Length: 51
Image 1 (spheres, rainbow, N blue to C red):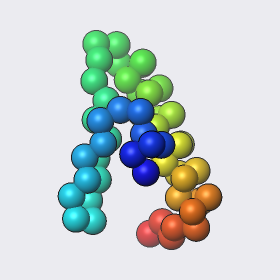
Image 2: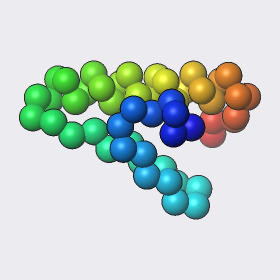
Image 3: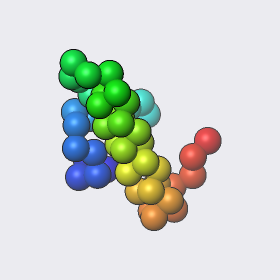
């Protein structure tokens, strides 16, 4: 999963967080949206259930 996420990925037990930082809110939102889409696609490709 870490190869899918370009930003800081924190994993602990069954929790995870993606950290995106910057000064421009719209760029942060776009980066986070792109990251979440990548993770979503990875979950679909690997047949992982999303609850």
